Length: 186
Image (cartoon, rainbow, N blue to C red; front, side):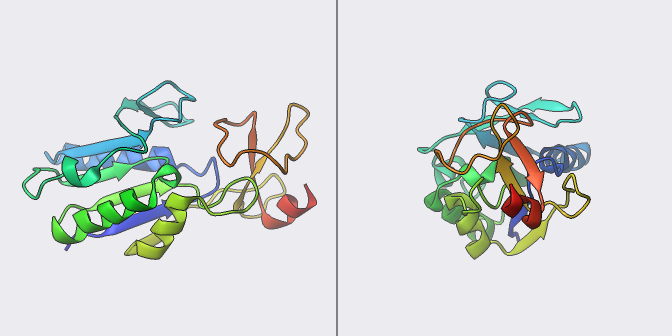
C-alpha cells in the first residue's frame, strides 16, 4: 500500500539532495518517477530541483492551479511522485496527493520546510503534518552547534527580520537555519 510521506527540515538540511537520490534510486531500477517543484521558487531558475551540493535536475512545476488528481490516473505507470518545496502546496493539493497514494497506489514523497521565518506553519506543511502517513525530520545544525529547527530571515546586515510577507524566496543571503534559542535571541 502506497503512502504519503513528509520529509521536513530547516533550510540547508539536504532535502533537495535526498529527493534527487530517491529519484535516482527508482530510475536506476527502471521505474518512472515524476518530480515537481514550486513555480515560485526561482532561486536556481524555473523548473529545477537544485542541491546546494551541485546536482541539479529539470522537473515539472506546480502552481496554485495544479490538479494532481488529473495528472495521475490510476494507470499512470508512475512508481513515485516526488515534490520539492512542498510547503508551497495548497491544502487541496496535499489532500489530492493523499488520495493518490491511498486510492491509486502511487507513493508521494514531499520535501519541504515546516515553518516560516516567524515560526508559523505554511499551509502545505500544516496539511502534510495532518495527513502524512509517515513523517521524517531531516537534521541540520545551527551556527552554535545545536540542531537547527527554525528558519530565520535576515537583512543585508545579517540582522533578524521579524515582519514581512510569509513567502520571500531566498537562499543563504536571506535565511539562516538556527536552533530555537538562537531564533529567540535573534
